Image (cartoon, rainbow, N blue to C red; front, side, top):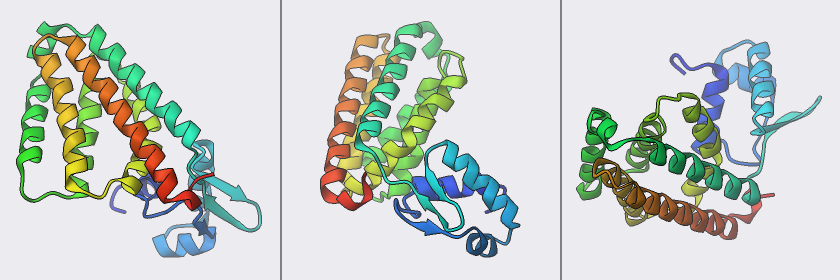
Length: 216
């Protein structure tokens, strides 16, 4: 686990779908597996229950909550709204001074043209994209809002995307958002953000059809 808390460790496993919806856990068994006191696992489960990621069944087990399509579509709308608000609020002169935007654009171009590609490569770039854009107007709380909503969005992406081309298509839309910002053309960025939102909705609906047992 390195330096991750028990809460963060389990949350990462949920986000990556290693701990799939419907999976049951015993506090005692997980504590033994992680080599940590049972009280720490119970504390982590309580926090995850507040996040609506697990359901605690007293005296029995803790279950990873199943996905909810309506909630995921709401999350996609929230993320889109936050990104559009940031883009409208940021001035082109400020963007030119943001080295992280240029570096991110370059890394996306490498990702798009690379011969070797993995899920991890995409989600690393995906994380940097949302972290960078949501941080442009200097309000760090926006990061927390976005990444809270993105967790279940990412879970559905992992369920419905299996081809390199699917990931590349999304990465190219991220690139269009950045190109609009760097060119001082927020309308182009907003158009790309809306296309991203439409794409995520498509994959969310696809995930329900392909994996109905993982949804409510």
